[in-house]
Structure formats: C-alpha cells, structure tokens
Length: 310
Image 1 (spheres, rainbow, N blue to C red):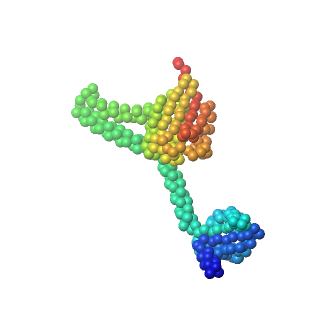
Image 2 (image 1 turned 60 degrees about the vertical axis):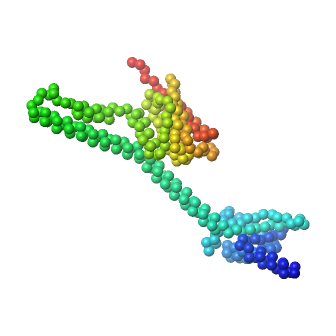
Image 3 (image 1 turned 45 degrees about the vertical axis):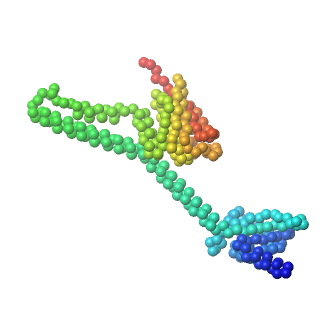
C-alpha cells in the first residue's frame, strides 16, 4: 500500500505544470519532476545533474527565459528545512507566457503613447503661430472689404460731383483703425493672448492672479515660465488647470505656478525645458525654485528695470 501511495505521489509530482527540483546540501538532485528536466534541457541542451549547473543558467541576469516554442518561464530559488533539520534548496520554474505577453503589449502601448505625446507636443508648438496666422488673415479680409467699399463709395461720390466735405469717411476710418491696431498692439499683449490660445489648444485653463511687470525683459521671462509649466502640467501631470500668481516690488517680479494635476511621486529630474528656463532666469540675475511636496510648485523671481522719469 505504501509503495502504491509513494508511486502515486511521484507520478503526480512528475506531471505538475510547473518545474520543481530539490537539491541536497551538496547540490545533488534529490527529487526533480519531468517539467523541470524538459525546461532545463530546452534551454541548455544538457540534462540537469546538479544545483551549480542550474545556478549558472540563472546567473545570466535575466529573470524570464524564452523557449523556442514561444513559452516563457520564470525561475525562483529558496531554502527549505524539513522537520528533522535537513536543509534543501528548492528551485521552481513557472510558466509565465501569458504574463510575459501582456507585459510586452503594455510596453508597446507605452511606446505608442510616448510617440503620441511627442506628436501632440509638436502640434501644440505650432498652435500659437497658426492662430496668429488666422487672426492676420481675418483682419486682412476685413480691411479688404472696408477699403473696397470705401473706394466704390468715394468713386461714386466724385462722379456725382459732390463736395468732399460731405463724403462719409466711416469705412476708411474703420480700415485705418484695424491697421493701426495691428501695428501698434503691444508685443506683450500679443504674447499673453498667444499664451491663452496655446492653453486652449492644449485643453488647460490658465488662471492668473496679479499683474505682469512693466519691464519687457522680466515679463518675457515670466511668460516663458508659464509656457513651460503649462506644457509640463499637461504632459506629466494630466492637469486641466494652471494657477499663476504674480507679484511685483520696486526691484523684483515674482511668479508662482501650480496645477490641478497629480503630484510628482518624487524629486523632479529637470529636462531640457526646465534646464533652459533655469539658465534664462540665472542670466537675468533671478532665482528659480521647484517644490514637489505637497504638490508641484515652481517659483521664479527676476529683477525689474524702472525707466527714469524724464
């Protein structure tokens, strides 16, 4: 009966779907099932004889081994002790083919997401210029229409021999006003409008509390800060809102930027954008500080120049 029972246990052990093998303190095989023998032979072309042979295979650094049939196996080693104090080394080989396949699919999906994010970044970089071109085209069409109407009205007026004082100059004035508005609009206002247009294209709302400094140089640096934070907030934190606080003293302008997205999991490694921003701020004589706890916050201070009264 005991012999039959032992044979049944050994048969069940041999037909386990996972590979299992036990070695004594000398590294000699004491018990090993068919699956472990098959996997080891498929990987090395030799029969498993001792623990050092298996450890040499596992020392290659890979935690997953692929067979020619496409299946993936993961090995695990641990020390066990029986009730009588005898120590054994147990090594198991588990079929992780499905897990490996899903892992590869996830890696491919992540790669595609990175490519999509890069395309979005390039498209976002063109949003400001595209919107600006649309605005210019719209203005040109309005000017064209107004001047066209004015030319026709003026020609008809002159053909009728009426005094010039009676000519309605409204259309001409509207056209001139549009041209002057385009040429005289402050560059800083264009930059702020472009910033808001870019934010709209990225799908993020920018809330600004405070006023920009009058110094054009300081203002441009602060706009660069907001642009960089806006792009990073969307790309890395999935933010929908950007919060900007502005302040200005007699000698220094300050900007603090946070967002509604996920807080960083650790210290931020400054990439090309933040590094360039830090260099720009430093060259201006200002300072830049990044906090990640309890959430991301970037604070910049830059000196401002005051025009002397004439």
